[in-house]
Image (tube, rainbow, N blue to C red):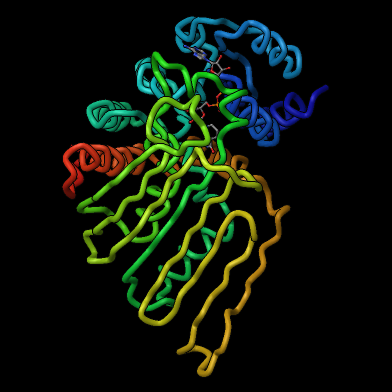
Length: 356
Ligand SMILES: NC(=O)c1ccc[n+]([C@@H]2O[C@H](COP(=O)([O-])OP(=O)(O)OC[C@H]3O[C@@H](n4cnc5c(N)ncnc54)[C@H](O)[C@@H]3O)[C@@H](O)[C@H]2O)c1
């Protein structure tokens, strides 16, 4: 018996009905499947991918018998309760919309959608159906970023006046294994697909954004990517705090990927990133005369953030509450990103439009 089957049966034995999950898109979707397998009372029962070899391998490795290249055949099934949408960015809206219309709870990978109209539509649909809808802004589940958030919330840093986050990714190897990103017919937008991480983080730390000014250019080291892939934004938050987001995805570097999150307040500073698994904090009012940073290390094995993200989603379904990153957060992040794209066209700061 597989771990997935035994977990689901244990849950059913406890009087809890198993949640039956379908996964659309089996790249990031395979990571979802691994995480679902470790959650009690959850079974991956169906899968969809337009790549037949990938679909067959996934079905074999995960003991999934219901498969299709057509998402409609999977999403409309009565024996599916939950849909994880892990297809390319520009397909999220269409896939999420049908899943909600069919009464399924939805876990949607980031970015939630690629236009503000689509974001608003999904907000309305989730509100009217009452279904659980989570967005894959997984960095909120990174323990040392959560700790920075707690330091801000509990006032350890005093009044926040500046927050910055960067998404720095040498994507050249990723382009080889996920060619949809560089497909000239519908390439990924690097600002929407990459900056969604840091924009969501700074919104989480400093609240809603009023205005964005965005500049972009093209890194020269990834000519296969057809759009701008180097973006710098300044942000003005409703609270009066200011912020900066840098997204770059055509650079040459190793390790190939890092996300930073730094928060600056009247009583202290906290700096953190995904390479070092630690916070460096300067908290002089607590430690007068502090000459250098206090380093707070975090344990890498505390759990993969995707697992924590999906545990929260499953718990939200069972508890009838909103997931920690719900549809409104997803929509506000999209609205902020879209204001940035408008700004890069007009050359002026642009206001973030409301989500309803
Ligand atoms: N949260 C994160 O940190 C994170 C990391 C990587 C990717 N993502 C997101 O996950 C999504 C998928 O990216 P990926 O890296 O897994 O790409 P990928 O290419 O590895 O996987 C996407 C899969 O979708 C399949 N597909 C394409 N069109 C389809 C359709 N119409 N119906 C069904 N399947 C279809 C492709 O064949 C492919 O197997 C993107 O939205 C991406 O932004 C999120």
